Image 1 (tube, one colour):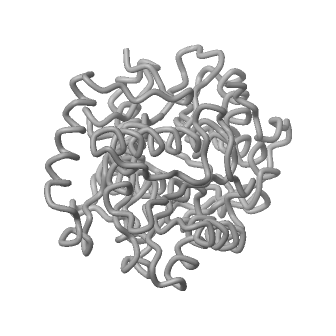
Image 2: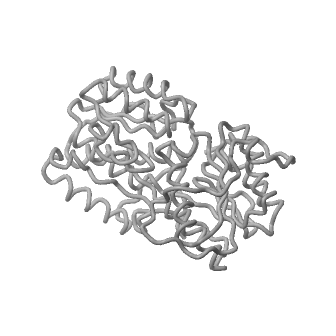
Image 3: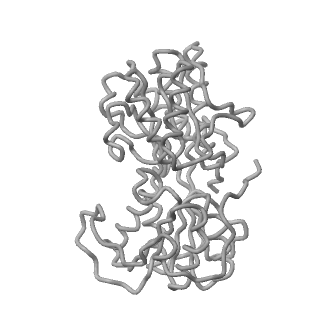
Length: 362
């Protein structure tokens, strides 16, 4: 696949955080940790959001939670920059360099060019990327990536087992590897259910073989998610997995309004992070971005940085299928055991879930 870059080119001007989408102040407030605040240490951890913002109920929010926990549990100093759109990326990253952050984390594939450029030009500082790798690694970079196709495979199998119409769907925000990797696994999970049960459940919205399907080309406009979900519902889909950040919440709104359509969340457990839709969230394909961010900061604080990448898998609990919560009693008999066996088969390598967006674990 051609990993097309969508991020803006890195700029040379150093702007104040307040001028580029962030407040530049030390983060305060709830951090979700149950531990008492740690003694302050001389380490500045910084993070730049994708355009969805910190309250996107998706990967930005999860990354911010990891930073907040590091502030509390490790005693690090923190700075954040919230990008309003892609034009903020380069300036936000440069502002972190100007602030001499020991570690700057860019959240999302879209920041690849800005963070990668800064890492190349500032080898004395460390950088990390969520959902993207560095093209020319020099040792001061760490990719935080996730083989979400493994957990999405389980979600696809479950969706195929629970559909009433025989049609399930998925759609993406932007056609980039960190999105299509979910869709690939989902399609393969449905195919596995069909194979094992002599069924013919159809997936609408993604053709894995041709790598083509339904996209909103946007991660922010929830109205687009509503529109696409309504189209998929009209085509007969009664379970939809939107891989589109905040746009997916628009799909959840459409499903809730329909009354007979359900959602599989992504990135975080939507039953908790998007609780207003919990009545229609069957389960979610999770990736533990929060812990990956915390672990990366801890590595820097403890002088254990070695530039190795983090790859989340089912085996290391970096990805997983969330609980079925209110839908647990509606699961077909034996499905829970089947999902557990499939998970173990993937961990053992008996089943290999392939995707062009997958990452090597060795």
